[in-house]
Image (cartoon, rainbow, N blue to C red):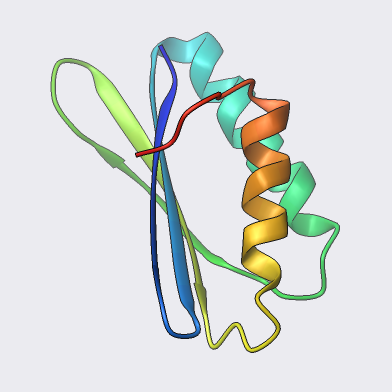
Length: 86
């Protein structure tokens, strides 16, 4: 099951997407890469292991003056069919 968590402060936004297994990994990582590449603003991204065989990809935007990250995150969530975000 893929789920997401969002955090935002002034000019900073972060979306964390947790997933499990090879199929979900391919889906999440390829979706994030494809969507973020379309925009001029570039995020810092990294992947970590969490617990019980789950991993998380983290997408962070720093100095996001025009608040573009929200639009990008919405597109990613929609593409991954994530209906709710903590």
